[in-house]
Length: 324
Ligand SMILES: NC(=O)C1=CN([C@@H]2O[C@H](COP(=O)(O)OP(=O)(O)OC[C@H]3O[C@@H](n4cnc5c(N)ncnc54)[C@H](O)[C@@H]3O)[C@@H](O)[C@H]2O)C=CC1
Ligand SMILES: O=C(O)[C@@H](O)C(=O)[C@H](O)[C@@H](O)CO
Image (cartoon, rainbow, N blue to C red):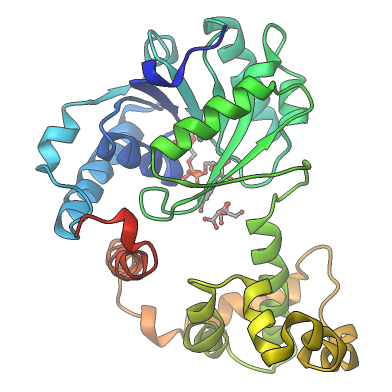
């Protein structure tokens, strides 16, 4: 039998990059013990410092009640993977987006871990069915729990089972993610890129195309997103947005006579690339150097600015989940 929700209190996070640090911060903030693993000591030290900084930020933003130090006592940084996964109740993988690396890791974890320990991948779009091919003993415990960056602030987690993932694994992973106050979407069908990234990249492909076509600069395209589309999408998805866009006639009018009907005149002009053309990417990279807002700001400055904005929006949209 698998481990039951009530007994999950220590989690191993494998990978100490952007997402491993975000998962670790979230888990600590929700009262869990965390073993954070990465092989290199210097990478680990940088990651531990980032987790501390993120917890200070969460405290300043009123997202946690206790002093950051009280959460940090539940964190252990480890550079030996056998030690990191010893006596844990759940494992989150957050290593590089590469099938070979993930399959090697899942193979190792599957041979080392007791059969009742779920292994959840953070992958942005790879398929668990493919990763499970490397799991000899218990592939049924492999699942995808795809977070959104930064995981300690954006609530969505997309759960994607592979062909061999058991219903129990899905149910327990969903329960755990809901205990972490995540907004969980369970995909009914395995598809690369899942839902969020497919939507995000369909839009991003057209954004790059508009730069390539010379229609607008990267900064102006971002303004279109933040001054209109993105504002609405913070609390309404595309279907509700266009249902309202259809006026009293709703989504039916939208498609039959409204904007959705009119768009049939020009949808064929959208980019149809299946890879980003190098010439287009080159233009984007050049224009990013001229992006006024980011000039003179470090990654830390921008991350802090992003997190403050995210918390403000989160508190407005998810008021019921916030204690301040
Ligand atoms: N960065 C993002 O916005 C998001 C990323 N993800 C996914 O999360 C996973 C991690 O992404 P990031 O944290 O951005 O990557 P990252 O490159 O920032 O961190 C990767 C971590 O894995 C470690 N690592 C690299 N190769 C390894 C190997 N062969 N074995 C074990 N550890 C290894 C690195 O030391 C580092 O700690 C990826 O699958 C990514 O697609 C998911 C959501 C958002
Ligand atoms: O956008 C996010 O936060 C995530 O959904 C991602 O997966 C990352 O954007 C990136 O890894 C997309 O490939």
